[in-house]
Image (cartoon, rainbow, N blue to C red; front, side, top):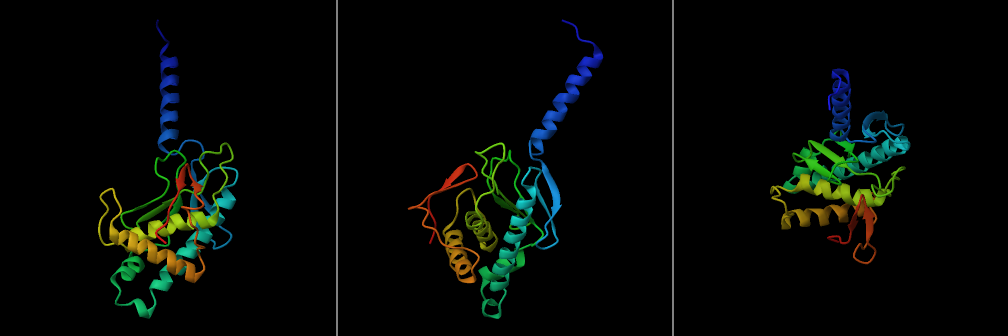
Length: 199
């Protein structure tokens, strides 16, 4: 079977476009949108509820700022883990995760980028937002990576778990997180189940 050259070009172009869409997040590609809450632009999925997503990221960033400010207080000046968090936290690094990413959330290079899943990936086409408290649990998990000196080799170290526990306790005191017993009440988060907590 012989194809006309223009048909081959069209098919290759379509395949290239589909590959580009897949690599760059597929449906709901990231777009930059300014939050009313803080006037900053964030990368969020280009989905119908993107305005709610950008406001959620602004709230999360504000909560992260409060945690970093807490550890930046004079009483923690000689605390190396607090110092790690304060020095590594970049308030401009937070963004929403791509819908096609295999990871739910992650921090890259100890805070260079913090990528957060905000949506229930199992509930298309609307992909509703996850509740803020659950997302804050995950964000505090990522902040524990910033706090931890040891590099992860695929498993979380005892130092990481101690830092995560500390962050959850202090975030509760600050008022940006409300403790949940996930062993008793598991929560669905971005296609996975949260079933425990170091608290």
